[in-house]
Length: 355
Image 1: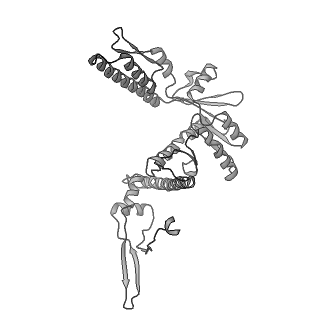
Image 2: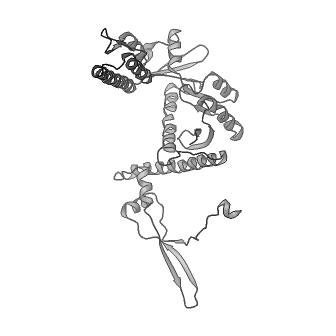
Image 3: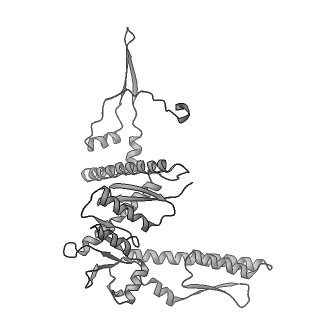
């Protein structure tokens, strides 16, 4: 199998505009340069706002966007937020369920919010990892207790590796008890409190003027990144199943990804249409996947006519679909054809045959 990085540009409604394939070891930040160049020189776009996830639009990328006369909306990383707090640019008390904003003298804007649901999820995830490491320690201690020749230092190293993999080593430590045959877990509540103080907190920054675009607009535009995340899920493991990609030529890989993008374009159109149908018909409770699966059951009947002079004609008749399929066509105002022209049988030409 081969690894690739897929770059995707979507418009404000989540409809795909362009896709690009990079080598698997390409950093996400490095993919932005070609997107800026593409929007500026290929698309001749003007008054564009690039919205990127936290850490993707850094200072160098912000300068590049400014040179192209583009604006940006992005979020700061946790390290960047902590740095601003230490510099007293922003205060921890400003992170609340209601949006708050700070505008510096140089017009730099910071929009802050705390999501209590996300904070609870992070806390629960942290406690879940703690439960896992406790279970691992219990199993190691049980093994040491039952096997007198087992080495406790090896068991301790094993548990420490698990501690680092679960990323709880910043506020927990392990040590051997005085007996030397049991591992003990120590928790630092002070470090845990310091670590969790930014749970659910995020800080947005933008080059957009506060006179033209208020903090609510900036926040809602950033939250629209969820549509891009949904696109990637659909690309990779959803309906379109782009993965796995095996070793092949670069041109074929790019062609494959491009076809997947075009397919997702159709998915977005169907999704919008289904939403409209749900608004007009409350009884219609159907996802895009379910709608496509229904349409896959449509079939045609081949009918062949012939006369005494041996002249023959073939048509494909469309039988009456099931009621649920017919409902889709009726609500979409799409007439279902009665007959279709006969499809000629095509013989695929392989490279071997062509040669």
